[in-house]
Every structure is written in structure tokens, then in C-alpha cells.
Length: 74
Image (cartoon, rainbow, N blue to C red; front, side, top):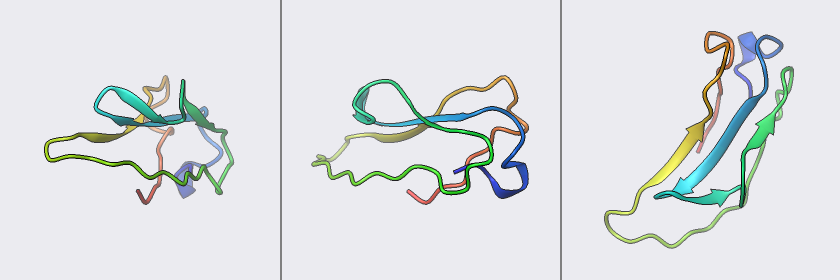
């Protein structure tokens, strides 16, 4: 979700979860949270991993990084 104090500022947040370089969520592209959204996005994701695997929570780059902040609880 958008960070509380900047919820209406900036642009949408675009996020995804990767297993190495492979998209896990969403299956393709980016999930998007519009400005003013305090609900955010949820996922019900289960993945099998092995020692050394990398799971990344990725927030896309922004034209307004001072205001495009995410609050999350992975």
C-alpha cells in the first residue's frame, strides 16, 4: 500500500515478487496501487524454494521517489 503520509502524492506504485528472475506475482508485468489507496494489494502465494534461492519484493522505479513510498509486510 502507499505510505500513509504520502498516500495522495506521487504516482501509482508498481510492485512484483520474483523467484530469482522468474515472476511469481503477478504472473506477468506489475501489480499497481493507485495514489490514495490505503488497502493496497494482497497475494496468496506459496512457493517451494531450495537453499540459495532468492525471493525478491521489487518496487518499480518512479519519477517521484520522494512521494512514491510503499508500506508493506511481506
